[in-house]
Length: 109
Ligand SMILES: [Zn+2]
Ligand SMILES: [Zn+2]
Image 1 (cartoon, rainbow, N blue to C red):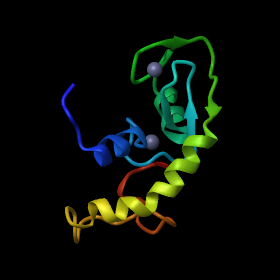
Image 2: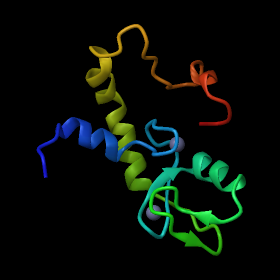
Image 3: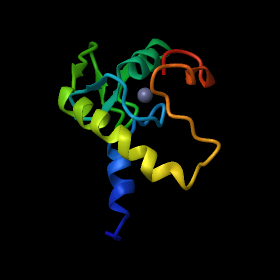
Image 4: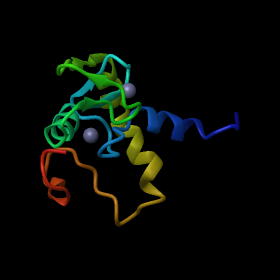
């Protein structure tokens, strides 16, 4: 395994694979993959089968377990994110904190 940027790794761990943003109301599937509740709900609405977007495991029914621990971590990391990305995306990056910048993507995510 190549050495990776720990900050980047941490950021990946806290990012939803569907919207690529930090988790909002993260929920965990039985396969231990996490998604925003809105993202996985929307993803499943458009598909015939309930499958994990990450590992393709299928489920007979919706079983979303709120991941409070992850949510707390994400909350704490939001401040760090500004530090990490400030130099990279100056002028382009707008934190989605209270909703005035969330009209970039349709839906809730
Ligand atoms: Zn998401
Ligand atoms: Zn999975």
